[in-house]
Image 1 (tube, each protein chain N blue to C red):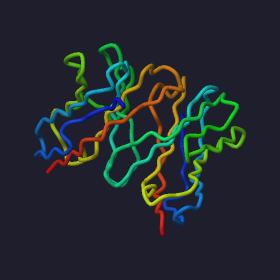
Image 2: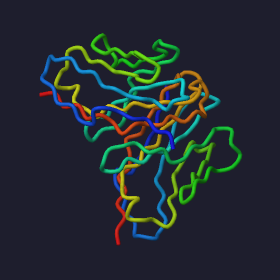
Image 3: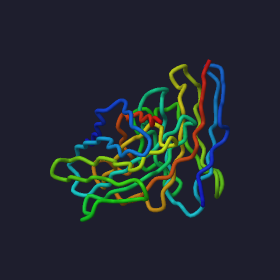
Length: 116
Length: 116
């Protein structure tokens, strides 16, 4: 069964460093998403991406964040200058259609980011 | 704005018993989708079941069923014949066609523990 994959599974970085989190969405899906979950808290939406541009972003997704689909398979989240409060689990998700309320988003296994 | 409320931070159930996890929601969208995800201790987010706001029947998926009461704005997850492997965090989420964009809004989750 097709699945979303994410690398790395765990990333440790120093405050102020740049990190890139990578995702490979399900191959025939058109909409891609990033969510984050701070330890012990609920899952929060960061950004959605369609047709090579951001379709929606939350207030969390400030200028320190960017997303990119550098080729036909990868979808990346970049944090330019990490802060302690960026420590969280980051989930990539994808969906086939995106605009319908009925469209299911499938999540990857997550990347645990630890900022020291 | 959309809101999901899960009032049970933790639940215990005996193996082979049924358990109901509560979820209430608030939205002004006429069309929306309700989703349940399971998050085991390993951290991944696993899609379980979906209910559309216009669906006439309650959704079922194996041992999972969704008790959808539209007038009461509730979408409770029922797990029948609980197994030890059902021990996990369970998140209710919703997605609306308008207003909420194409993002998922999550509740705070319910930690389910299945006991022998």
